Image 1 (tube, rainbow, N blue to C red):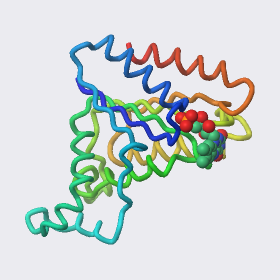
Image 2 (image 1 turned 120 degrees about the vertical axis):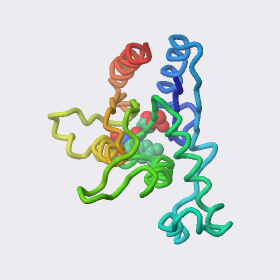
Image 3 (image 1 turned 60 degrees about the vertical axis):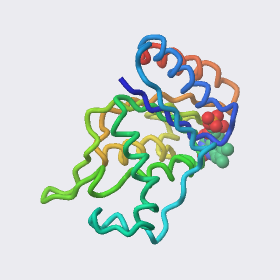
Image 4 (image 1 turned 180 degrees about the horizontal axis):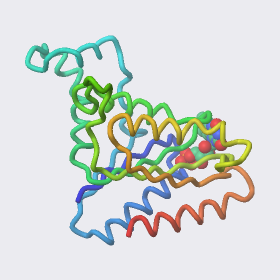
Length: 199
Ligand SMILES: Cc1cc2nc3c(=O)[nH]c(=O)nc-3n(C[C@H](O)[C@H](O)[C@H](O)COP(=O)(O)O)c2cc1C
């Protein structure tokens, strides 16, 4: 069993970091022989996609050394995902969506021919059979059925893009109201759900 833990908050003492660390600690206690890979996107930020990304369309054996080198980050990140049985993503809400650190990771792992294939039936995700847990923190609240639900571009986007690469077994845990009074109960509920899930 391998757990890939991805943190994408810019803040060292962040809510999502606190919750992903709790998940990792409890999961390790429950699975002592399991391996944990921690990718902290704030301490090792990823390159942005440039024009050189066209190299992804070239048959691998025909890549030049510099193209191969350019794609090495994407290759390594995809290998990390392929090796994982469970992926835990800490995702702060920034501007109603995700942080640019997490978007940079997504841009590197969504790759035609490697994680998504186009056939006669359209795109097919190639990363199935893995569980994903997304732990978010938000300053406000965007509960289902509330008037603010439509402003949540974070969960719908992540569900869509993870599903696009075949990751459809996704559980979301939200710690809401973290910049308001009343954030405590939401944080406590998130921590409790994490306790159950990590078991
Ligand atoms: C750049 C930035 C943008 C933010 N945008 C939103 C937002 O659109 N909606 C919201 O509810 N909270 C927003 N927040 C508040 C964060 O979601 C909140 O502080 C959360 O705890 C961040 O996760 P973290 O503690 O893991 O860093 C924003 C915070 C920052 C730093």
